[in-house]
Length: 322
Image 1: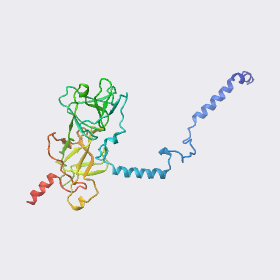
Image 2: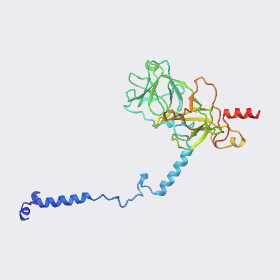
Image 3: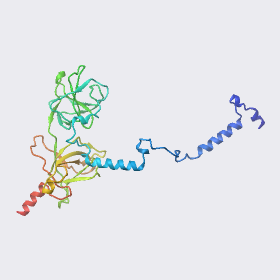
Image 4: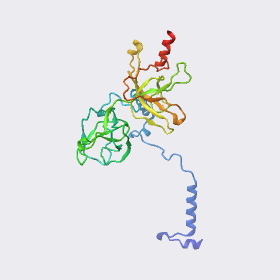
Protein backbone atom coordinates (compact mmCIF):
# COMPACT_ATOMS: atom_id res chain seq x y z
CA UNK A 1 0.00 0.00 0.00
CA UNK A 2 2.85 2.35 0.83
CA UNK A 3 4.40 1.72 -2.57
CA UNK A 4 1.15 2.55 -4.34
CA UNK A 5 0.74 5.68 -2.22
CA UNK A 6 4.26 6.89 -2.95
CA UNK A 7 3.62 6.69 -6.71
CA UNK A 8 0.76 9.23 -6.50
CA UNK A 9 1.44 12.84 -7.47
CA UNK A 10 -1.93 14.61 -7.83
CA UNK A 11 -0.20 17.91 -8.65
CA UNK A 12 1.26 16.23 -11.74
CA UNK A 13 -2.00 14.36 -12.43
CA UNK A 14 -0.30 11.08 -11.59
CA UNK A 15 -2.28 8.56 -9.54
CA UNK A 16 -1.44 5.21 -8.09
CA UNK A 17 -2.87 1.93 -9.31
CA UNK A 18 -5.08 1.50 -6.24
CA UNK A 19 -6.72 4.91 -6.75
CA UNK A 20 -7.49 4.14 -10.39
CA UNK A 21 -9.03 0.79 -9.49
CA UNK A 22 -11.28 2.46 -6.92
CA UNK A 23 -12.40 5.04 -9.52
CA UNK A 24 -13.20 2.36 -12.06
CA UNK A 25 -15.26 0.42 -9.51
CA UNK A 26 -17.26 3.56 -8.67
CA UNK A 27 -17.93 4.27 -12.34
CA UNK A 28 -19.08 0.71 -13.03
CA UNK A 29 -21.44 0.86 -10.08
CA UNK A 30 -22.96 4.14 -11.30
CA UNK A 31 -23.38 2.88 -14.86
CA UNK A 32 -25.09 -0.30 -13.71
CA UNK A 33 -27.95 1.65 -12.12
CA UNK A 34 -30.98 2.45 -14.34
CA UNK A 35 -31.42 6.14 -15.21
CA UNK A 36 -34.21 8.00 -13.39
CA UNK A 37 -37.59 7.86 -15.14
CA UNK A 38 -38.11 11.60 -15.01
CA UNK A 39 -35.23 13.97 -14.44
CA UNK A 40 -37.45 17.05 -14.67
CA UNK A 41 -39.06 17.69 -11.29
CA UNK A 42 -40.73 21.05 -11.87
CA UNK A 43 -41.41 23.44 -14.72
CA UNK A 44 -42.75 26.99 -14.90
CA UNK A 45 -45.20 26.76 -17.82
CA UNK A 46 -47.11 30.02 -17.59
CA UNK A 47 -44.87 31.72 -20.16
CA UNK A 48 -44.41 28.65 -22.39
CA UNK A 49 -46.12 28.61 -25.81
CA UNK A 50 -45.46 24.98 -26.72
CA UNK A 51 -48.69 22.88 -26.83
CA UNK A 52 -46.93 20.11 -24.93
CA UNK A 53 -46.55 22.23 -21.79
CA UNK A 54 -49.73 24.29 -21.91
CA UNK A 55 -52.25 23.74 -19.11
CA UNK A 56 -54.56 20.81 -19.76
CA UNK A 57 -57.69 22.98 -19.61
CA UNK A 58 -56.31 25.32 -22.25
CA UNK A 59 -55.36 22.44 -24.54
CA UNK A 60 -58.85 20.95 -24.15
CA UNK A 61 -60.48 24.26 -25.17
CA UNK A 62 -58.22 24.61 -28.21
CA UNK A 63 -58.98 21.04 -29.25
CA UNK A 64 -62.72 21.73 -29.12
CA UNK A 65 -62.26 24.85 -31.26
CA UNK A 66 -60.22 22.90 -33.80
CA UNK A 67 -62.86 20.18 -33.99
CA UNK A 68 -65.59 22.77 -34.57
CA UNK A 69 -63.52 24.40 -37.32
CA UNK A 70 -62.88 21.01 -38.92
CA UNK A 71 -66.61 20.36 -39.13
CA UNK A 72 -67.09 23.66 -40.97
CA UNK A 73 -64.30 22.97 -43.46
CA UNK A 74 -64.86 20.94 -46.64
CA UNK A 75 -63.46 17.44 -46.83
CA UNK A 76 -59.69 17.14 -46.93
CA UNK A 77 -58.33 17.50 -50.44
CA UNK A 78 -61.40 19.42 -51.67
CA UNK A 79 -61.00 23.07 -52.68
CA UNK A 80 -63.88 25.17 -51.39
CA UNK A 81 -65.80 27.45 -53.74
CA UNK A 82 -65.02 30.30 -51.35
CA UNK A 83 -61.28 29.88 -51.77
CA UNK A 84 -59.59 32.34 -54.11
CA UNK A 85 -56.13 32.72 -55.56
CA UNK A 86 -55.24 34.97 -52.62
CA UNK A 87 -55.61 31.94 -50.34
CA UNK A 88 -52.69 30.28 -52.14
CA UNK A 89 -50.04 32.56 -50.64
CA UNK A 90 -48.61 29.59 -48.74
CA UNK A 91 -47.45 27.92 -51.99
CA UNK A 92 -43.68 27.71 -52.03
CA UNK A 93 -41.85 28.95 -55.11
CA UNK A 94 -39.03 26.50 -54.40
CA UNK A 95 -35.30 26.82 -55.06
CA UNK A 96 -33.40 28.25 -56.78
CA UNK A 97 -35.20 31.61 -56.85
CA UNK A 98 -36.00 33.07 -60.27
CA UNK A 99 -37.48 36.53 -61.03
CA UNK A 100 -41.21 36.27 -61.66
CA UNK A 101 -44.47 38.08 -61.09
CA UNK A 102 -48.20 37.24 -60.95
CA UNK A 103 -49.99 37.18 -64.28
CA UNK A 104 -53.58 36.87 -65.51
CA UNK A 105 -53.69 34.00 -67.97
CA UNK A 106 -56.58 32.28 -69.76
CA UNK A 107 -59.14 32.86 -66.97
CA UNK A 108 -57.18 30.56 -64.70
CA UNK A 109 -58.18 30.29 -61.06
CA UNK A 110 -57.53 28.05 -58.11
CA UNK A 111 -59.29 24.69 -58.43
CA UNK A 112 -59.55 24.79 -62.24
CA UNK A 113 -58.82 21.62 -64.19
CA UNK A 114 -56.36 21.51 -67.09
CA UNK A 115 -55.40 18.81 -69.56
CA UNK A 116 -51.90 18.27 -70.90
CA UNK A 117 -52.22 18.74 -74.66
CA UNK A 118 -52.46 15.38 -76.41
CA UNK A 119 -50.55 16.74 -79.44
CA UNK A 120 -47.37 17.20 -77.43
CA UNK A 121 -44.48 14.95 -78.38
CA UNK A 122 -43.01 15.05 -74.90
CA UNK A 123 -44.09 14.70 -71.30
CA UNK A 124 -44.73 17.77 -69.17
CA UNK A 125 -42.14 18.08 -66.40
CA UNK A 126 -43.46 18.76 -62.90
CA UNK A 127 -40.81 20.62 -60.90
CA UNK A 128 -40.43 21.51 -57.25
CA UNK A 129 -40.50 25.30 -57.80
CA UNK A 130 -41.41 28.06 -60.20
CA UNK A 131 -37.86 28.05 -61.58
CA UNK A 132 -37.10 25.87 -64.60
CA UNK A 133 -33.89 24.88 -62.80
CA UNK A 134 -35.65 23.50 -59.72
CA UNK A 135 -35.67 19.78 -59.00
CA UNK A 136 -37.81 17.50 -61.16
CA UNK A 137 -40.55 15.67 -59.24
CA UNK A 138 -42.27 13.64 -61.94
CA UNK A 139 -43.64 13.86 -65.49
CA UNK A 140 -47.22 14.28 -66.67
CA UNK A 141 -48.06 12.43 -69.87
CA UNK A 142 -50.11 14.03 -72.69
CA UNK A 143 -53.80 13.82 -71.87
CA UNK A 144 -53.28 13.76 -68.09
CA UNK A 145 -55.58 15.92 -65.98
CA UNK A 146 -54.05 18.46 -63.57
CA UNK A 147 -55.77 20.70 -61.02
CA UNK A 148 -54.58 24.26 -60.45
CA UNK A 149 -53.43 25.03 -56.92
CA UNK A 150 -52.87 28.79 -57.11
CA UNK A 151 -52.34 31.81 -59.34
CA UNK A 152 -49.95 31.51 -62.31
CA UNK A 153 -46.70 33.46 -62.50
CA UNK A 154 -44.65 34.64 -65.46
CA UNK A 155 -40.85 34.46 -65.62
CA UNK A 156 -39.43 37.96 -66.15
CA UNK A 157 -35.80 37.30 -67.09
CA UNK A 158 -33.51 34.84 -68.79
CA UNK A 159 -33.99 32.71 -71.88
CA UNK A 160 -37.38 31.49 -70.60
CA UNK A 161 -38.70 35.04 -70.14
CA UNK A 162 -42.46 35.06 -70.75
CA UNK A 163 -43.10 31.44 -69.72
CA UNK A 164 -46.26 30.99 -67.68
CA UNK A 165 -45.70 28.75 -64.66
CA UNK A 166 -48.57 27.29 -62.63
CA UNK A 167 -48.72 25.44 -59.28
CA UNK A 168 -50.74 22.22 -59.32
CA UNK A 169 -52.28 19.87 -56.79
CA UNK A 170 -51.03 18.26 -54.64
CA UNK A 171 -47.59 19.84 -55.19
CA UNK A 172 -45.28 21.01 -57.94
CA UNK A 173 -45.09 23.57 -60.75
CA UNK A 174 -45.59 23.10 -64.50
CA UNK A 175 -45.20 25.29 -67.57
CA UNK A 176 -48.72 26.17 -68.69
CA UNK A 177 -47.78 28.29 -71.71
CA UNK A 178 -44.39 28.94 -73.32
CA UNK A 179 -45.58 30.68 -76.51
CA UNK A 180 -44.05 34.01 -75.42
CA UNK A 181 -40.67 32.26 -75.23
CA UNK A 182 -41.05 30.47 -78.56
CA UNK A 183 -42.46 27.22 -77.16
CA UNK A 184 -45.87 25.54 -77.18
CA UNK A 185 -48.91 25.89 -74.95
CA UNK A 186 -48.84 22.87 -72.70
CA UNK A 187 -52.20 23.07 -70.93
CA UNK A 188 -55.75 23.53 -72.18
CA UNK A 189 -58.81 24.21 -70.01
CA UNK A 190 -60.94 21.16 -69.23
CA UNK A 191 -64.04 20.29 -67.26
CA UNK A 192 -63.74 18.53 -63.94
CA UNK A 193 -63.58 14.74 -64.46
CA UNK A 194 -66.82 12.88 -63.79
CA UNK A 195 -67.12 9.29 -62.59
CA UNK A 196 -70.00 6.82 -62.53
CA UNK A 197 -70.52 4.33 -59.70
CA UNK A 198 -70.39 0.85 -61.24
CA UNK A 199 -70.42 -1.29 -58.10
CA UNK A 200 -73.67 -2.83 -56.90
CA UNK A 201 -73.89 -4.33 -53.44
CA UNK A 202 -74.65 -8.08 -53.58
CA UNK A 203 -76.98 -7.77 -50.60
CA UNK A 204 -79.45 -5.52 -52.43
CA UNK A 205 -82.57 -4.67 -50.43
CA UNK A 206 -81.91 -0.95 -50.66
CA UNK A 207 -78.42 -1.22 -49.14
CA UNK A 208 -75.84 1.41 -50.04
CA UNK A 209 -73.50 0.50 -52.88
CA UNK A 210 -70.83 3.14 -52.19
CA UNK A 211 -70.09 5.12 -49.01
CA UNK A 212 -68.89 8.73 -49.23
CA UNK A 213 -66.67 9.52 -46.23
CA UNK A 214 -65.42 12.82 -44.89
CA UNK A 215 -61.71 12.12 -45.10
CA UNK A 216 -59.08 10.08 -46.85
CA UNK A 217 -59.09 7.43 -44.13
CA UNK A 218 -61.32 4.42 -44.71
CA UNK A 219 -62.74 4.67 -41.20
CA UNK A 220 -63.56 8.40 -41.30
CA UNK A 221 -67.10 9.64 -40.75
CA UNK A 222 -69.67 8.58 -43.37
CA UNK A 223 -71.16 11.60 -45.15
CA UNK A 224 -73.72 9.87 -47.38
CA UNK A 225 -74.26 6.80 -49.54
CA UNK A 226 -74.56 6.32 -53.29
CA UNK A 227 -76.24 3.82 -55.58
CA UNK A 228 -74.88 2.09 -58.65
CA UNK A 229 -75.26 4.53 -61.55
CA UNK A 230 -74.82 7.72 -59.53
CA UNK A 231 -72.37 10.25 -60.95
CA UNK A 232 -69.83 12.26 -58.97
CA UNK A 233 -67.42 15.04 -59.89
CA UNK A 234 -63.76 14.71 -59.02
CA UNK A 235 -62.65 17.50 -56.68
CA UNK A 236 -58.91 16.90 -56.47
CA UNK A 237 -56.07 14.49 -57.23
CA UNK A 238 -56.62 10.85 -56.33
CA UNK A 239 -54.49 9.20 -53.65
CA UNK A 240 -53.14 5.64 -53.73
CA UNK A 241 -52.73 4.14 -50.27
CA UNK A 242 -49.92 1.83 -49.26
CA UNK A 243 -52.14 -1.23 -49.86
CA UNK A 244 -52.96 -0.08 -53.41
CA UNK A 245 -56.49 1.19 -52.73
CA UNK A 246 -57.21 4.33 -54.77
CA UNK A 247 -59.14 7.07 -52.95
CA UNK A 248 -60.53 10.22 -54.58
CA UNK A 249 -62.13 13.47 -53.31
CA UNK A 250 -65.50 14.20 -54.92
CA UNK A 251 -68.34 16.69 -54.83
CA UNK A 252 -72.00 16.08 -55.66
CA UNK A 253 -75.35 17.77 -55.24
CA UNK A 254 -77.93 17.09 -52.57
CA UNK A 255 -81.49 16.30 -53.58
CA UNK A 256 -84.38 18.21 -51.97
CA UNK A 257 -87.56 16.15 -51.78
CA UNK A 258 -89.44 18.44 -49.42
CA UNK A 259 -89.81 22.00 -48.22
CA UNK A 260 -87.89 21.07 -45.09
CA UNK A 261 -84.95 19.89 -47.17
CA UNK A 262 -84.95 23.12 -49.19
CA UNK A 263 -84.92 25.21 -46.01
CA UNK A 264 -82.23 23.05 -44.41
CA UNK A 265 -78.96 24.84 -43.56
CA UNK A 266 -76.99 21.91 -44.95
CA UNK A 267 -74.90 22.79 -48.04
CA UNK A 268 -76.35 22.17 -51.51
CA UNK A 269 -73.10 20.50 -52.59
CA UNK A 270 -71.57 17.70 -50.55
CA UNK A 271 -67.86 16.91 -50.52
CA UNK A 272 -66.11 13.77 -49.39
CA UNK A 273 -63.89 10.85 -50.35
CA UNK A 274 -64.76 7.63 -52.17
CA UNK A 275 -62.85 4.47 -53.06
CA UNK A 276 -62.33 4.31 -56.81
CA UNK A 277 -60.52 0.99 -57.10
CA UNK A 278 -59.81 -1.59 -54.40
CA UNK A 279 -58.75 -4.43 -56.73
CA UNK A 280 -55.12 -4.21 -55.54
CA UNK A 281 -56.33 -5.23 -52.07
CA UNK A 282 -58.72 -7.92 -53.31
CA UNK A 283 -61.78 -5.64 -53.50
CA UNK A 284 -63.97 -4.43 -56.36
CA UNK A 285 -63.84 -1.46 -58.72
CA UNK A 286 -66.33 1.14 -57.51
CA UNK A 287 -66.11 3.91 -60.13
CA UNK A 288 -65.23 4.29 -63.79
CA UNK A 289 -64.52 7.57 -65.60
CA UNK A 290 -67.04 9.07 -67.98
CA UNK A 291 -65.97 10.28 -71.44
CA UNK A 292 -64.93 13.89 -71.87
CA UNK A 293 -67.92 14.62 -74.10
CA UNK A 294 -70.39 13.42 -71.46
CA UNK A 295 -73.06 16.14 -71.41
CA UNK A 296 -75.18 14.88 -68.52
CA UNK A 297 -75.01 16.33 -65.04
CA UNK A 298 -74.41 14.46 -61.85
CA UNK A 299 -77.86 13.57 -60.50
CA UNK A 300 -78.41 14.83 -56.97
CA UNK A 301 -78.28 12.16 -54.29
CA UNK A 302 -80.23 11.85 -51.06
CA UNK A 303 -78.80 8.78 -49.42
CA UNK A 304 -77.31 10.32 -46.28
CA UNK A 305 -79.00 7.95 -43.88
CA UNK A 306 -79.18 4.94 -46.14
CA UNK A 307 -82.72 5.82 -47.25
CA UNK A 308 -83.91 7.11 -50.60
CA UNK A 309 -83.47 5.51 -54.00
CA UNK A 310 -80.83 5.82 -56.66
CA UNK A 311 -81.76 5.99 -60.31
CA UNK A 312 -82.02 2.23 -60.65
CA UNK A 313 -84.09 1.97 -57.48
CA UNK A 314 -86.49 4.67 -58.67
CA UNK A 315 -86.98 2.85 -61.99
CA UNK A 316 -87.77 -0.41 -60.23
CA UNK A 317 -90.16 1.37 -57.91
CA UNK A 318 -92.01 2.95 -60.85
CA UNK A 319 -92.24 -0.40 -62.66
CA UNK A 320 -93.62 -2.17 -59.58
CA UNK A 321 -96.13 0.64 -58.99
CA UNK A 322 -97.32 0.36 -62.60
